[in-house]
Length: 256
Length: 328
Image (cartoon, rainbow over all chains, first blue to last red):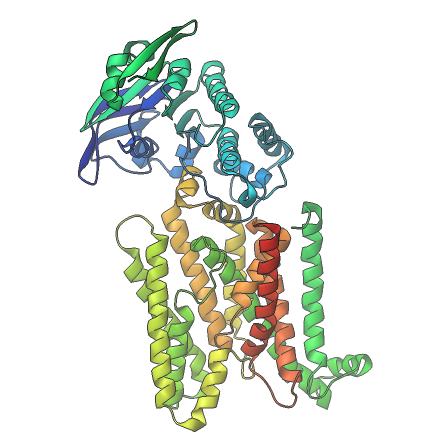
Protein backbone atom coordinates (compact mmCIF):
# COMPACT_ATOMS: atom_id res chain seq x y z
CA UNK A 1 0.00 0.00 0.00
CA UNK A 2 1.14 3.50 -0.80
CA UNK A 3 2.14 5.78 2.04
CA UNK A 4 3.73 9.20 2.34
CA UNK A 5 6.46 9.85 4.87
CA UNK A 6 7.85 13.21 5.93
CA UNK A 7 11.25 12.91 7.57
CA UNK A 8 12.58 15.79 9.68
CA UNK A 9 11.35 18.47 7.30
CA UNK A 10 12.54 22.03 7.71
CA UNK A 11 10.57 24.41 5.54
CA UNK A 12 10.76 28.17 5.50
CA UNK A 13 9.24 30.79 3.26
CA UNK A 14 10.65 34.30 3.04
CA UNK A 15 12.80 33.73 6.11
CA UNK A 16 9.83 32.58 8.20
CA UNK A 17 10.03 29.10 9.70
CA UNK A 18 7.03 26.99 8.86
CA UNK A 19 8.12 23.79 10.55
CA UNK A 20 11.20 22.42 12.24
CA UNK A 21 12.03 18.72 12.17
CA UNK A 22 8.53 17.81 11.04
CA UNK A 23 8.10 14.02 11.24
CA UNK A 24 4.98 12.10 10.38
CA UNK A 25 3.67 9.34 8.18
CA UNK A 26 0.37 9.14 6.35
CA UNK A 27 -0.79 5.55 6.07
CA UNK A 28 -3.62 3.98 4.08
CA UNK A 29 -6.96 4.41 5.81
CA UNK A 30 -5.92 7.60 7.57
CA UNK A 31 -7.77 10.88 7.11
CA UNK A 32 -5.50 13.73 8.15
CA UNK A 33 -6.65 17.26 8.85
CA UNK A 34 -4.12 20.09 8.49
CA UNK A 35 -5.02 22.98 10.76
CA UNK A 36 -3.44 26.37 11.28
CA UNK A 37 -4.21 30.08 11.04
CA UNK A 38 -4.08 32.05 7.78
CA UNK A 39 -0.67 32.43 6.20
CA UNK A 40 1.02 29.89 8.47
CA UNK A 41 2.18 27.76 5.51
CA UNK A 42 -0.42 25.03 5.02
CA UNK A 43 -0.31 25.37 1.25
CA UNK A 44 3.48 25.44 1.20
CA UNK A 45 3.60 22.24 3.24
CA UNK A 46 1.12 20.51 0.93
CA UNK A 47 3.15 21.60 -2.12
CA UNK A 48 6.26 20.24 -0.49
CA UNK A 49 4.49 16.92 0.18
CA UNK A 50 3.49 16.81 -3.49
CA UNK A 51 7.11 17.35 -4.54
CA UNK A 52 6.31 20.71 -6.13
CA UNK A 53 8.81 22.50 -3.91
CA UNK A 54 11.82 21.17 -2.04
CA UNK A 55 12.23 21.54 1.72
CA UNK A 56 15.29 23.25 3.23
CA UNK A 57 16.15 19.98 4.91
CA UNK A 58 14.65 16.53 5.29
CA UNK A 59 12.90 14.16 2.89
CA UNK A 60 9.49 13.39 1.56
CA UNK A 61 9.22 9.69 0.75
CA UNK A 62 6.59 8.33 -1.59
CA UNK A 63 6.50 4.52 -1.55
CA UNK A 64 9.87 4.65 0.26
CA UNK A 65 11.52 6.69 -2.51
CA UNK A 66 12.57 10.33 -2.31
CA UNK A 67 9.86 12.23 -4.14
CA UNK A 68 12.27 14.64 -5.84
CA UNK A 69 13.97 11.69 -7.55
CA UNK A 70 10.73 10.34 -9.05
CA UNK A 71 9.47 11.42 -12.48
CA UNK A 72 6.35 13.61 -12.29
CA UNK A 73 4.39 11.01 -14.22
CA UNK A 74 5.08 8.32 -11.62
CA UNK A 75 4.14 10.72 -8.85
CA UNK A 76 0.92 11.71 -10.64
CA UNK A 77 -0.23 8.08 -10.76
CA UNK A 78 0.12 7.78 -6.97
CA UNK A 79 -0.51 11.25 -5.63
CA UNK A 80 -3.01 13.93 -6.54
CA UNK A 81 -3.57 17.39 -5.16
CA UNK A 82 -6.52 19.75 -5.21
CA UNK A 83 -5.12 23.27 -5.35
CA UNK A 84 -6.60 26.11 -3.38
CA UNK A 85 -7.53 28.13 -6.45
CA UNK A 86 -8.98 26.85 -9.68
CA UNK A 87 -8.83 29.26 -12.62
CA UNK A 88 -9.72 28.10 -16.11
CA UNK A 89 -8.44 30.39 -18.90
CA UNK A 90 -9.32 28.47 -22.06
CA UNK A 91 -12.71 27.27 -23.20
CA UNK A 92 -12.87 23.54 -22.61
CA UNK A 93 -15.93 21.51 -21.73
CA UNK A 94 -16.58 20.21 -18.22
CA UNK A 95 -16.25 16.63 -19.51
CA UNK A 96 -12.91 17.32 -21.24
CA UNK A 97 -11.59 18.96 -18.08
CA UNK A 98 -12.68 16.08 -15.84
CA UNK A 99 -11.02 13.70 -18.28
CA UNK A 100 -7.61 15.42 -17.85
CA UNK A 101 -7.37 13.32 -14.69
CA UNK A 102 -6.60 10.35 -16.96
CA UNK A 103 -3.55 12.15 -18.41
CA UNK A 104 -0.86 10.45 -16.29
CA UNK A 105 -2.39 7.03 -17.01
CA UNK A 106 -2.30 7.31 -20.82
CA UNK A 107 0.69 7.04 -23.16
CA UNK A 108 1.49 9.72 -25.74
CA UNK A 109 -0.66 8.61 -28.65
CA UNK A 110 -3.35 6.99 -26.56
CA UNK A 111 -6.81 8.53 -26.53
CA UNK A 112 -9.24 8.33 -23.65
CA UNK A 113 -11.33 5.18 -24.07
CA UNK A 114 -14.91 4.51 -23.05
CA UNK A 115 -13.80 3.40 -19.56
CA UNK A 116 -11.95 6.68 -19.04
CA UNK A 117 -15.00 8.57 -20.20
CA UNK A 118 -17.22 6.57 -17.85
CA UNK A 119 -14.95 7.43 -14.91
CA UNK A 120 -15.20 11.11 -15.80
CA UNK A 121 -18.98 10.94 -16.09
CA UNK A 122 -19.25 9.14 -12.74
CA UNK A 123 -17.07 11.75 -11.05
CA UNK A 124 -19.11 14.58 -12.57
CA UNK A 125 -22.27 12.98 -11.21
CA UNK A 126 -20.69 12.55 -7.77
CA UNK A 127 -19.97 16.27 -7.50
CA UNK A 128 -23.47 17.15 -8.65
CA UNK A 129 -22.48 18.65 -12.01
CA UNK A 130 -24.60 16.28 -14.07
CA UNK A 131 -26.04 18.02 -17.12
CA UNK A 132 -23.07 20.41 -17.27
CA UNK A 133 -20.85 18.03 -19.28
CA UNK A 134 -20.85 20.13 -22.46
CA UNK A 135 -20.69 23.49 -20.71
CA UNK A 136 -17.53 25.61 -20.99
CA UNK A 137 -15.42 25.71 -17.84
CA UNK A 138 -14.97 29.47 -18.20
CA UNK A 139 -18.67 29.85 -17.49
CA UNK A 140 -18.79 27.95 -14.18
CA UNK A 141 -19.35 29.67 -10.87
CA UNK A 142 -16.61 29.59 -8.23
CA UNK A 143 -18.19 26.67 -6.38
CA UNK A 144 -18.87 24.72 -9.58
CA UNK A 145 -15.27 25.20 -10.76
CA UNK A 146 -14.13 23.91 -7.38
CA UNK A 147 -16.30 20.80 -7.61
CA UNK A 148 -15.07 20.18 -11.14
CA UNK A 149 -11.46 20.36 -9.94
CA UNK A 150 -12.36 17.79 -7.29
CA UNK A 151 -14.00 15.60 -9.94
CA UNK A 152 -10.78 15.72 -12.03
CA UNK A 153 -8.88 14.56 -8.97
CA UNK A 154 -11.30 11.63 -8.52
CA UNK A 155 -10.74 10.67 -12.16
CA UNK A 156 -6.98 10.70 -11.54
CA UNK A 157 -7.56 8.01 -8.85
CA UNK A 158 -4.49 8.70 -6.72
CA UNK A 159 -3.79 6.59 -3.63
CA UNK A 160 -2.71 9.74 -1.79
CA UNK A 161 -4.98 12.76 -1.82
CA UNK A 162 -3.75 16.19 -0.80
CA UNK A 163 -6.60 18.69 -0.60
CA UNK A 164 -5.99 22.38 -0.05
CA UNK A 165 -9.17 23.78 1.49
CA UNK A 166 -11.51 21.63 -0.62
CA UNK A 167 -14.59 23.17 0.99
CA UNK A 168 -13.72 26.74 -0.09
CA UNK A 169 -16.57 28.46 -1.95
CA UNK A 170 -18.92 25.54 -1.25
CA UNK A 171 -22.30 25.59 0.40
CA UNK A 172 -22.94 23.23 3.35
CA UNK A 173 -24.51 20.48 1.28
CA UNK A 174 -21.54 20.30 -1.08
CA UNK A 175 -19.04 20.62 1.78
CA UNK A 176 -20.48 17.51 3.37
CA UNK A 177 -20.76 15.78 0.03
CA UNK A 178 -17.07 16.24 -0.77
CA UNK A 179 -15.91 15.31 2.72
CA UNK A 180 -18.14 12.21 2.64
CA UNK A 181 -16.58 11.23 -0.64
CA UNK A 182 -13.04 11.64 0.67
CA UNK A 183 -14.04 9.60 3.73
CA UNK A 184 -15.37 6.80 1.53
CA UNK A 185 -12.13 6.72 -0.48
CA UNK A 186 -10.09 6.61 2.69
CA UNK A 187 -12.15 4.03 4.56
CA UNK A 188 -13.45 1.79 1.76
CA UNK A 189 -10.50 1.97 -0.70
CA UNK A 190 -7.80 2.32 1.96
CA UNK A 191 -6.37 5.46 0.42
CA UNK A 192 -4.89 8.28 2.48
CA UNK A 193 -5.78 11.93 2.61
CA UNK A 194 -4.35 15.15 4.01
CA UNK A 195 -6.86 17.97 4.01
CA UNK A 196 -6.12 21.59 4.87
CA UNK A 197 -9.19 22.99 6.61
CA UNK A 198 -10.34 26.14 8.32
CA UNK A 199 -13.46 24.55 9.72
CA UNK A 200 -12.44 22.82 12.96
CA UNK A 201 -15.80 21.06 13.15
CA UNK A 202 -15.38 19.44 9.74
CA UNK A 203 -12.02 18.21 11.05
CA UNK A 204 -13.68 16.94 14.22
CA UNK A 205 -16.35 15.17 12.23
CA UNK A 206 -14.15 13.46 9.62
CA UNK A 207 -10.46 13.38 10.49
CA UNK A 208 -8.73 10.44 12.15
CA UNK A 209 -5.48 12.38 12.55
CA UNK A 210 -4.53 16.03 12.88
CA UNK A 211 -1.44 18.05 12.07
CA UNK A 212 -1.37 21.50 13.66
CA UNK A 213 0.99 24.26 12.55
CA UNK A 214 1.39 26.85 15.29
CA UNK A 215 3.96 29.06 13.56
CA UNK A 216 7.69 29.67 14.23
CA UNK A 217 8.37 26.05 13.37
CA UNK A 218 6.16 24.70 16.16
CA UNK A 219 3.89 21.77 15.23
CA UNK A 220 1.98 18.84 16.67
CA UNK A 221 0.76 15.67 14.94
CA UNK A 222 -1.29 12.72 16.14
CA UNK A 223 -4.73 11.11 16.46
CA UNK A 224 -7.57 13.63 16.29
CA UNK A 225 -8.98 12.55 19.65
CA UNK A 226 -5.74 13.53 21.39
CA UNK A 227 -5.20 16.82 19.63
CA UNK A 228 -8.61 18.38 19.17
CA UNK A 229 -9.16 20.07 22.51
CA UNK A 230 -9.88 23.67 23.49
CA UNK A 231 -6.35 24.24 24.83
CA UNK A 232 -4.67 23.35 21.53
CA UNK A 233 -7.24 25.23 19.47
CA UNK A 234 -6.86 28.37 21.61
CA UNK A 235 -3.11 28.19 21.13
CA UNK A 236 -3.60 27.59 17.41
CA UNK A 237 -6.07 30.34 16.60
CA UNK A 238 -5.23 32.78 19.40
CA UNK A 239 -8.85 33.20 20.39
CA UNK A 240 -11.05 31.80 23.16
CA UNK A 241 -12.78 28.53 22.26
CA UNK A 242 -16.04 27.19 23.66
CA UNK A 243 -16.71 23.45 23.59
CA UNK A 244 -20.09 21.91 22.83
CA UNK A 245 -20.72 18.31 23.73
CA UNK A 246 -22.99 16.77 21.13
CA UNK A 247 -24.15 13.22 20.43
CA UNK A 248 -21.59 13.02 17.61
CA UNK A 249 -18.73 14.19 19.86
CA UNK A 250 -17.12 17.49 20.76
CA UNK A 251 -17.67 20.58 18.59
CA UNK A 252 -15.96 23.95 18.91
CA UNK A 253 -17.14 27.53 18.71
CA UNK A 254 -15.23 30.79 18.99
CA UNK A 255 -15.93 31.98 22.54
CA UNK A 256 -15.97 35.47 23.95
CA UNK B 1 -18.55 25.30 -30.43
CA UNK B 2 -19.42 22.56 -32.87
CA UNK B 3 -20.69 19.23 -31.52
CA UNK B 4 -17.95 16.60 -31.26
CA UNK B 5 -19.29 14.57 -34.17
CA UNK B 6 -19.05 17.55 -36.52
CA UNK B 7 -15.48 18.43 -35.59
CA UNK B 8 -13.97 15.65 -37.70
CA UNK B 9 -16.13 16.67 -40.66
CA UNK B 10 -14.77 20.18 -40.24
CA UNK B 11 -11.22 18.87 -40.72
CA UNK B 12 -12.26 17.17 -43.97
CA UNK B 13 -14.00 20.34 -45.09
CA UNK B 14 -10.88 22.39 -44.31
CA UNK B 15 -8.75 19.96 -46.34
CA UNK B 16 -11.07 20.30 -49.32
CA UNK B 17 -11.08 24.07 -48.91
CA UNK B 18 -7.27 24.08 -48.84
CA UNK B 19 -7.18 22.29 -52.19
CA UNK B 20 -9.89 24.66 -53.44
CA UNK B 21 -7.93 27.71 -52.32
CA UNK B 22 -4.87 26.59 -54.23
CA UNK B 23 -6.98 25.97 -57.34
CA UNK B 24 -8.55 29.41 -56.92
CA UNK B 25 -5.13 31.02 -56.51
CA UNK B 26 -3.75 29.35 -59.61
CA UNK B 27 -6.71 30.43 -61.75
CA UNK B 28 -7.02 34.05 -60.71
CA UNK B 29 -4.75 37.02 -61.17
CA UNK B 30 -4.10 39.69 -63.76
CA UNK B 31 -4.84 36.98 -66.34
CA UNK B 32 -7.75 35.00 -64.99
CA UNK B 33 -8.42 31.56 -66.36
CA UNK B 34 -11.69 29.69 -66.88
CA UNK B 35 -12.09 26.03 -65.97
CA UNK B 36 -11.21 24.65 -69.43
CA UNK B 37 -8.30 27.06 -69.89
CA UNK B 38 -7.02 26.10 -66.48
CA UNK B 39 -7.36 22.40 -67.28
CA UNK B 40 -5.38 22.64 -70.52
CA UNK B 41 -2.79 24.93 -68.94
CA UNK B 42 -2.14 22.64 -66.00
CA UNK B 43 -1.45 19.73 -68.37
CA UNK B 44 1.00 21.66 -70.50
CA UNK B 45 3.54 23.45 -68.40
CA UNK B 46 5.31 24.80 -71.47
CA UNK B 47 2.34 26.75 -72.74
CA UNK B 48 2.05 30.41 -71.85
CA UNK B 49 -0.68 29.83 -69.28
CA UNK B 50 0.99 26.63 -68.09
CA UNK B 51 4.13 28.55 -67.33
CA UNK B 52 2.09 31.18 -65.47
CA UNK B 53 0.51 28.49 -63.31
CA UNK B 54 3.48 26.22 -62.72
CA UNK B 55 6.23 28.81 -62.44
CA UNK B 56 4.46 31.70 -60.74
CA UNK B 57 1.09 31.03 -59.17
CA UNK B 58 1.39 27.52 -57.75
CA UNK B 59 4.75 28.08 -56.03
CA UNK B 60 3.42 31.30 -54.56
CA UNK B 61 0.19 29.63 -53.40
CA UNK B 62 2.18 26.77 -51.88
CA UNK B 63 4.42 29.24 -50.07
CA UNK B 64 1.35 31.11 -48.81
CA UNK B 65 -0.23 27.88 -47.53
CA UNK B 66 2.91 26.77 -45.71
CA UNK B 67 3.53 30.20 -44.16
CA UNK B 68 -0.10 30.53 -43.06
CA UNK B 69 -0.18 27.12 -41.43
CA UNK B 70 3.13 27.70 -39.67
CA UNK B 71 1.93 31.02 -38.26
CA UNK B 72 -1.36 29.49 -37.10
CA UNK B 73 0.41 26.57 -35.41
CA UNK B 74 2.89 28.92 -33.79
CA UNK B 75 0.00 31.06 -32.55
CA UNK B 76 -1.66 28.05 -30.88
CA UNK B 77 1.63 27.16 -29.17
CA UNK B 78 2.33 30.71 -28.00
CA UNK B 79 -1.15 30.92 -26.51
CA UNK B 80 -0.52 27.80 -24.44
CA UNK B 81 2.97 28.96 -23.53
CA UNK B 82 1.80 32.32 -22.21
CA UNK B 83 -1.58 30.95 -21.09
CA UNK B 84 -3.22 33.79 -22.88
CA UNK B 85 -5.70 33.35 -25.74
CA UNK B 86 -4.56 36.68 -27.18
CA UNK B 87 -0.87 35.85 -27.63
CA UNK B 88 0.47 35.76 -31.20
CA UNK B 89 3.66 34.42 -32.84
CA UNK B 90 5.34 37.83 -32.83
CA UNK B 91 4.73 38.80 -29.22
CA UNK B 92 8.14 37.56 -28.03
CA UNK B 93 10.21 39.43 -30.60
CA UNK B 94 11.06 36.64 -33.07
CA UNK B 95 9.82 38.62 -36.06
CA UNK B 96 11.45 41.82 -34.79
CA UNK B 97 14.89 40.21 -34.85
CA UNK B 98 14.23 38.79 -38.32
CA UNK B 99 12.98 42.14 -39.61
CA UNK B 100 15.95 44.06 -38.23
CA UNK B 101 18.46 41.69 -39.82
CA UNK B 102 16.64 41.70 -43.16
CA UNK B 103 16.33 45.48 -43.35
CA UNK B 104 19.98 45.84 -42.41
CA UNK B 105 20.76 43.47 -45.29
CA UNK B 106 18.66 45.59 -47.64
CA UNK B 107 20.52 48.75 -46.55
CA UNK B 108 23.86 47.15 -47.32
CA UNK B 109 22.59 45.83 -50.63
CA UNK B 110 22.73 42.12 -49.81
CA UNK B 111 21.40 40.02 -52.71
CA UNK B 112 17.70 39.17 -52.35
CA UNK B 113 18.45 35.44 -52.32
CA UNK B 114 20.35 35.79 -49.06
CA UNK B 115 17.70 37.84 -47.26
CA UNK B 116 15.77 34.80 -45.94
CA UNK B 117 18.97 33.55 -44.33
CA UNK B 118 19.50 36.93 -42.70
CA UNK B 119 15.92 36.74 -41.42
CA UNK B 120 16.57 33.30 -39.92
CA UNK B 121 19.79 34.57 -38.36
CA UNK B 122 18.05 37.61 -36.85
CA UNK B 123 15.22 35.45 -35.52
CA UNK B 124 17.67 32.98 -33.97
CA UNK B 125 19.57 35.81 -32.26
CA UNK B 126 16.29 37.08 -30.84
CA UNK B 127 15.17 33.61 -29.71
CA UNK B 128 18.49 32.94 -27.96
CA UNK B 129 18.52 36.40 -26.40
CA UNK B 130 15.04 36.02 -24.92
CA UNK B 131 15.69 32.38 -23.97
CA UNK B 132 18.95 33.25 -22.23
CA UNK B 133 17.59 36.28 -20.39
CA UNK B 134 14.28 34.74 -19.32
CA UNK B 135 15.59 31.33 -18.34
CA UNK B 136 17.26 32.15 -15.02
CA UNK B 137 17.69 29.36 -12.52
CA UNK B 138 14.37 29.45 -10.69
CA UNK B 139 11.14 27.76 -11.68
CA UNK B 140 9.43 28.52 -14.98
CA UNK B 141 8.05 32.03 -15.06
CA UNK B 142 5.63 32.87 -17.84
CA UNK B 143 5.59 36.49 -16.72
CA UNK B 144 9.35 36.82 -16.96
CA UNK B 145 9.34 35.26 -20.42
CA UNK B 146 6.52 37.55 -21.55
CA UNK B 147 8.21 40.67 -20.18
CA UNK B 148 11.61 39.75 -21.62
CA UNK B 149 10.03 38.98 -24.99
CA UNK B 150 7.86 42.05 -25.15
CA UNK B 151 10.71 44.37 -24.17
CA UNK B 152 13.05 42.70 -26.68
CA UNK B 153 10.37 43.14 -29.33
CA UNK B 154 10.11 46.86 -28.60
CA UNK B 155 13.90 47.10 -28.79
CA UNK B 156 13.81 45.60 -32.28
CA UNK B 157 10.95 47.92 -33.24
CA UNK B 158 13.06 50.93 -32.26
CA UNK B 159 16.01 49.67 -34.32
CA UNK B 160 13.70 49.05 -37.28
CA UNK B 161 12.38 52.62 -37.05
CA UNK B 162 15.97 53.85 -36.92
CA UNK B 163 16.85 51.98 -40.13
CA UNK B 164 13.69 53.21 -41.85
CA UNK B 165 14.37 56.82 -40.92
CA UNK B 166 17.95 56.67 -42.18
CA UNK B 167 17.26 54.77 -45.41
CA UNK B 168 17.09 56.48 -48.79
CA UNK B 169 13.59 56.90 -50.21
CA UNK B 170 14.03 54.46 -53.06
CA UNK B 171 14.58 51.49 -50.78
CA UNK B 172 11.78 52.33 -48.35
CA UNK B 173 9.07 50.73 -50.47
CA UNK B 174 10.69 47.30 -50.47
CA UNK B 175 11.29 47.54 -46.73
CA UNK B 176 7.70 48.49 -45.96
CA UNK B 177 6.42 45.61 -48.10
CA UNK B 178 8.65 43.22 -46.21
CA UNK B 179 7.53 44.60 -42.86
CA UNK B 180 3.85 44.22 -43.74
CA UNK B 181 4.41 40.75 -45.12
CA UNK B 182 4.68 40.03 -48.81
CA UNK B 183 4.72 36.85 -50.84
CA UNK B 184 5.65 38.38 -54.24
CA UNK B 185 9.22 37.12 -54.21
CA UNK B 186 8.66 34.12 -52.00
CA UNK B 187 10.04 30.76 -52.87
CA UNK B 188 9.32 27.70 -50.84
CA UNK B 189 12.53 26.10 -49.66
CA UNK B 190 12.36 22.35 -49.12
CA UNK B 191 13.60 22.57 -45.54
CA UNK B 192 10.60 24.68 -44.57
CA UNK B 193 8.39 21.70 -45.44
CA UNK B 194 10.53 19.60 -43.11
CA UNK B 195 10.07 22.21 -40.37
CA UNK B 196 6.31 22.27 -40.93
CA UNK B 197 5.87 18.49 -41.04
CA UNK B 198 8.23 17.83 -38.15
CA UNK B 199 6.61 20.46 -35.93
CA UNK B 200 3.16 19.21 -36.79
CA UNK B 201 3.95 15.61 -35.89
CA UNK B 202 5.70 16.62 -32.67
CA UNK B 203 2.85 18.95 -31.70
CA UNK B 204 0.30 16.22 -32.32
CA UNK B 205 2.27 13.77 -30.17
CA UNK B 206 2.30 16.38 -27.40
CA UNK B 207 -1.27 17.56 -28.00
CA UNK B 208 -2.74 16.08 -24.82
CA UNK B 209 0.16 17.54 -22.83
CA UNK B 210 -0.63 20.93 -24.35
CA UNK B 211 -4.21 20.60 -23.06
CA UNK B 212 -2.83 20.02 -19.58
CA UNK B 213 -0.25 22.82 -19.87
CA UNK B 214 -3.02 25.22 -20.82
CA UNK B 215 -4.50 24.59 -17.36
CA UNK B 216 -1.47 26.13 -15.68
CA UNK B 217 1.99 24.98 -14.74
CA UNK B 218 1.22 23.59 -11.29
CA UNK B 219 -1.83 21.68 -12.51
CA UNK B 220 0.23 20.25 -15.36
CA UNK B 221 2.99 19.11 -12.98
CA UNK B 222 0.44 17.50 -10.70
CA UNK B 223 -0.91 15.64 -13.73
CA UNK B 224 2.54 14.27 -14.51
CA UNK B 225 4.09 16.74 -16.96
CA UNK B 226 7.76 17.73 -16.59
CA UNK B 227 6.60 21.27 -17.29
CA UNK B 228 9.92 23.10 -17.47
CA UNK B 229 11.19 20.98 -20.32
CA UNK B 230 7.82 20.99 -22.00
CA UNK B 231 7.42 24.77 -21.87
CA UNK B 232 10.88 25.45 -23.28
CA UNK B 233 10.19 22.92 -26.00
CA UNK B 234 6.94 24.71 -26.85
CA UNK B 235 8.79 28.05 -26.87
CA UNK B 236 11.49 26.76 -29.22
CA UNK B 237 9.00 25.03 -31.50
CA UNK B 238 6.82 28.14 -31.80
CA UNK B 239 9.88 30.32 -32.38
CA UNK B 240 11.33 28.10 -35.10
CA UNK B 241 7.97 28.01 -36.90
CA UNK B 242 7.70 31.79 -36.71
CA UNK B 243 11.30 32.31 -37.83
CA UNK B 244 10.78 30.05 -40.85
CA UNK B 245 7.51 31.75 -41.82
CA UNK B 246 9.00 35.23 -41.44
CA UNK B 247 12.06 34.32 -43.50
CA UNK B 248 9.80 33.27 -46.39
CA UNK B 249 7.25 36.06 -46.39
CA UNK B 250 8.14 38.82 -43.93
CA UNK B 251 6.02 39.56 -40.87
CA UNK B 252 2.47 38.86 -42.00
CA UNK B 253 0.19 39.96 -39.19
CA UNK B 254 -3.01 38.62 -37.71
CA UNK B 255 -2.94 35.07 -39.13
CA UNK B 256 -1.23 33.74 -36.02
CA UNK B 257 -3.65 35.54 -33.72
CA UNK B 258 -6.97 35.20 -35.46
CA UNK B 259 -6.81 31.71 -36.89
CA UNK B 260 -6.21 29.91 -33.57
CA UNK B 261 -8.85 32.07 -31.92
CA UNK B 262 -11.40 31.42 -34.63
CA UNK B 263 -10.77 27.68 -34.53
CA UNK B 264 -11.04 27.68 -30.73
CA UNK B 265 -14.53 29.11 -31.11
CA UNK B 266 -15.42 26.34 -33.56
CA UNK B 267 -13.75 23.22 -32.15
CA UNK B 268 -12.89 24.14 -28.57
CA UNK B 269 -9.51 23.94 -26.87
CA UNK B 270 -8.59 20.27 -27.28
CA UNK B 271 -5.29 20.57 -29.15
CA UNK B 272 -5.70 17.18 -30.78
CA UNK B 273 -8.34 18.79 -32.97
CA UNK B 274 -7.40 22.48 -32.58
CA UNK B 275 -3.88 22.07 -33.99
CA UNK B 276 -4.90 20.34 -37.25
CA UNK B 277 -7.87 22.68 -37.69
CA UNK B 278 -5.76 25.80 -37.16
CA UNK B 279 -2.96 24.48 -39.38
CA UNK B 280 -5.35 23.82 -42.26
CA UNK B 281 -7.31 27.03 -41.85
CA UNK B 282 -4.17 29.16 -41.46
CA UNK B 283 -2.90 27.82 -44.76
CA UNK B 284 -6.05 28.37 -46.74
CA UNK B 285 -6.74 31.76 -45.14
CA UNK B 286 -3.36 33.04 -46.29
CA UNK B 287 -3.76 31.60 -49.80
CA UNK B 288 -7.10 33.40 -50.17
CA UNK B 289 -5.71 36.62 -48.70
CA UNK B 290 -2.69 36.52 -50.99
CA UNK B 291 -4.88 35.90 -54.04
CA UNK B 292 -6.95 38.92 -53.06
CA UNK B 293 -3.76 40.94 -52.60
CA UNK B 294 -2.78 40.12 -56.19
CA UNK B 295 -6.19 40.71 -57.75
CA UNK B 296 -8.10 43.45 -55.91
CA UNK B 297 -6.18 46.32 -57.51
CA UNK B 298 -4.54 44.27 -60.26
CA UNK B 299 -2.12 44.78 -61.89
CA UNK B 300 -1.09 46.66 -58.75
CA UNK B 301 -0.07 44.17 -56.00
CA UNK B 302 -0.71 44.82 -52.34
CA UNK B 303 1.31 43.42 -49.45
CA UNK B 304 -0.64 40.40 -48.15
CA UNK B 305 -0.24 41.63 -44.56
CA UNK B 306 -2.57 44.51 -45.38
CA UNK B 307 -5.25 42.08 -46.57
CA UNK B 308 -4.94 39.71 -43.60
CA UNK B 309 -5.27 42.71 -41.30
CA UNK B 310 -8.16 44.23 -43.23
CA UNK B 311 -9.98 40.89 -43.20
CA UNK B 312 -8.78 39.94 -39.76
CA UNK B 313 -9.44 43.04 -37.70
CA UNK B 314 -13.21 43.32 -38.33
CA UNK B 315 -13.62 39.54 -38.12
CA UNK B 316 -11.79 39.44 -34.84
CA UNK B 317 -13.67 42.37 -33.32
CA UNK B 318 -16.94 40.80 -34.40
CA UNK B 319 -16.05 37.48 -32.80
CA UNK B 320 -14.82 39.10 -29.64
CA UNK B 321 -18.02 41.09 -29.41
CA UNK B 322 -20.17 38.01 -29.97
CA UNK B 323 -18.20 36.11 -27.38
CA UNK B 324 -18.81 38.94 -24.92
CA UNK B 325 -22.52 38.87 -25.62
CA UNK B 326 -22.54 35.16 -24.87
CA UNK B 327 -20.97 36.03 -21.55
CA UNK B 328 -17.51 34.47 -21.91
